[in-house]
Image (cartoon, rainbow, N blue to C red; front, top):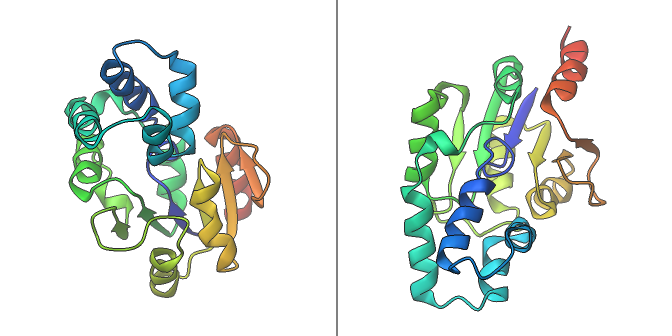
Length: 190
């Protein structure tokens, strides 16, 4: 199987770090559940909803980047899926150096054949140009993301899609736990 992965909230549980960074930026004046809800839509959405200035956006990114990768853990059993898949690629809005830092920390670089990051010049999701490139090069079978905007480009290209820990309508498959997903995939890979 050839899988295109989103990064934040799909491969790695980075939301706790994002929430802490936003909470610090907002001086604890907003409930963390509200911060999480807005960040899960997108960072741009949260920045707009919280009326962040450009300086605050820059400050948020500095706070979040300074948080050690040990607090941005991979989801349980995702590594087993990476090991079993024939090809894994990443498409993320996160800058490449931040992706590389986390992958280096967990020694996961070898799992990925290709990475398109936010600073590689492709339009942001849900634009499908980066997905087109990865699909043409790697013949993607499945797109996995935690937000609807992560899977919409895959849907547009006719690729099967999976939402992780999100039941929003629009995906072909829904997974709350990679262990169950691994067990199902393992049966099909036999």
